[in-house]
Amino acid sequence: MSAQITPAPAKKTALGNVVVGERKAVLSAASRAAQGWDFAEALHLALSQGCDDFTTLDAELVKRAARELAAGEKTPTVVTRL
Image (cartoon, rainbow, N blue to C red; front, side, top):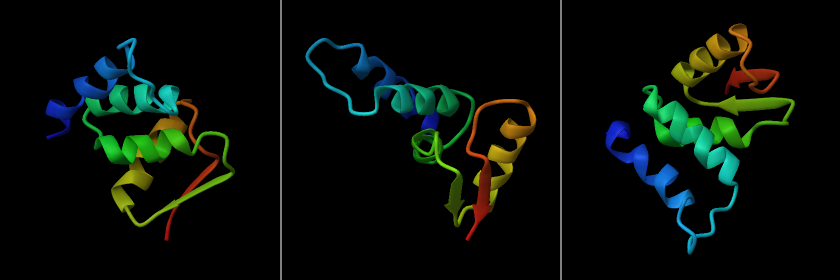
């Protein structure tokens, strides 16, 4: 389903009459969703940028974030499962 949702947030940020809070995070999440991420998980991760820790109940999200961190992508320093 995320493949169907992915273009919508990115397209809406380009509209002149639409104000998007946390625009950078929304665009980052849309980009990750295009790569197969769940949009909501990608948005939560993007919004956690600049935080020391990010805690989630989702074990798969922890694994994905760890892979990105290992690949040198900017993610929170510590992503843990609650």
